[in-house]
Length: 260
Image (tube, rainbow, N blue to C red; front, side, top):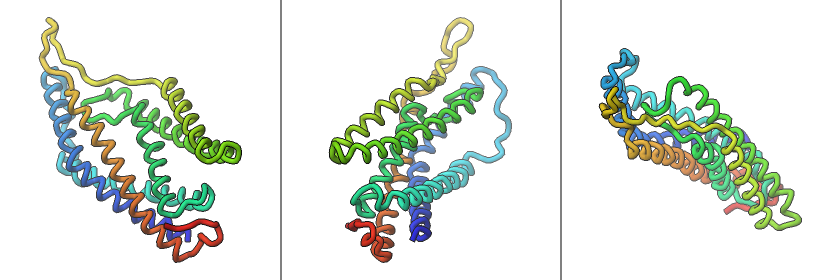
């Protein structure tokens, strides 16, 4: 049963990769193009050496590169999602396969993307210094790990408090502890503000404008949309497949679960 569920996760991840790539290609790529144009214009205005000849054209990067990256990441997340489902099914309460899949997808979207992105949001080309790229990447990964650990801890707290406080109050207490712990982590970790300001000459006159706030907002908004599309698709596809597999395998009888 577990192997079939993991296969379902791979299928769900692949479909999620296709849908999220379509969204990114439609909404994110135009912003990236404007960011690249801004970076090139700023480089010329500052009379700095360029980045040299690109190994891959923008068309190849926007289609093949982005498509492969999004698909590979989505499939990996689909497999991880299926593993988490196998561990959680029958252990976190009287949830049906469909409902559990939706709840897990929401939790993973929250902990693996949304919360880390609130601290370290995605940046388009031209935003961020190359010298801090490795540090920013490592801190983002650290934020993802800490957020995931805090979510797991919150679930553990909810289960421990449930017999005394009831499911609803225990859930509220666990959610509150997660919010407080996450806020503390965000307060402790360093913050970066590297959005390019206007380029000025020796007299103080503006020779090239700063990076457009609208483009930065759109990039971060549609990056969030891409992740949301991926997790929603994963949840819906996996929920349908898992419900069928669980019904055929009839594990609900042994675990006391019900199916929708």
